[in-house]
Length: 74
Image (cartoon, rainbow, N blue to C red; front, top):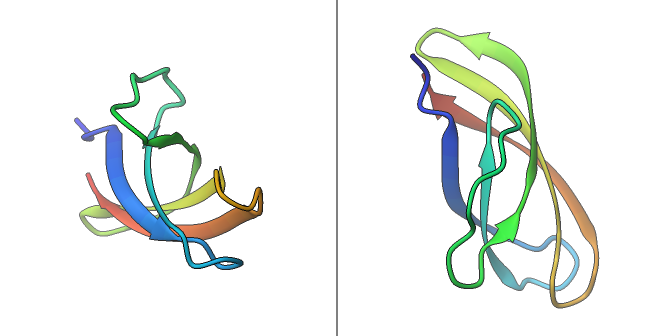
């Protein structure tokens, strides 16, 4: 069973704001805590014990939409 919730941080590519974010690998709704941003996650590959996830989120400071990939342990 995959651990489906991800809580992490990302630095905005446009303005360098540190963005705490959360998302669910299965697309489920999860409660955000504090100033976390709700991210959209799509699983794009499997690499051994990890899944590669494409993440998209919007910076709350400048509004830039950031897209990046992360590896998440299954």
